[in-house]
Length: 336
Ligand SMILES: *Cc1c(COP(=O)(O)O)cnc(C)c1O
Image (cartoon, rainbow, N blue to C red):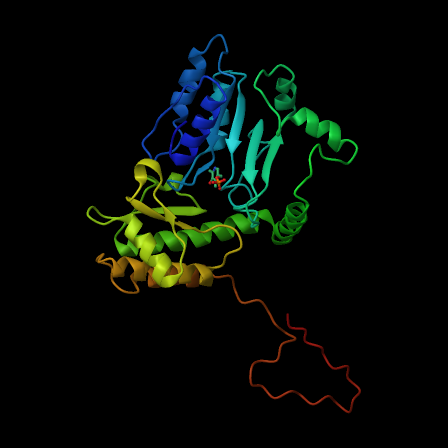
């Protein structure tokens, strides 16, 4: 399925490996064409198709695909192909269900929802994928599961592992389980809704055509005809030290992208929204100063969690209560 630059690159990768790829093209900004997938698989009576490759969150367009629906289409076609999911910009940030969707091979990287530097490619394989490996004819070296499984059994790797990255991964996984995946998904949704409120207030449109495809980790914002997204990105970076994503491939110049995943909260994101707004005004776009920031801020105010109790914290400026004759144990307030 080609829905944007990242799915395009995956197709390119498969073709360079010498694989035959049937490409399902959709307009960039739309999600996976589930009916067409089912149709294609139903017609493949000989089961020549070995894998269905889908990018869960197309980072170039800010479109999230319904992987569960792709699985249901494969089941409806009674097709045994393996289901491959690129989850680089979704795993750990948007709901992803390896077991429930019976994903056979999931891929992610350290540099997005896992909040680490770039450097780790992480793959997760189903028993069905591991069994298919026995008969697969593709050349493999670095990611040969066979070498990895053999060495792992004795606690080793077939190559020198990126140990500092693995220590980092342990820490980020601890952070994720401490917060809880459901809380993290809800946080990303809330942050994304604030960005979308800002985009509406600017009078602009997202690249994603329909709300059901809106991504909670990245928003691709279309710039009007006659304006270049490249200029917005350039000014944002050089004047305000704000890194925005560019329009990729056929979308070059037509949009800019705001990433909102990982270790991020609403005030950090409001800073980014303010920077975007300033850069857009600088390049001459007709944007009301403060419109996007106000819309996002109001969304965050309206959806903020109730204030947690802080019983042991003296309110700012309140005089410290003298301890009663030294009998009471003074409370210790630990601030971190
Ligand atoms: C970031 C990303 C990748 C990996 O690309 P890098 O250039 O290595 O960061 C792959 N797929 C998707 C969907 C991505 O967002």
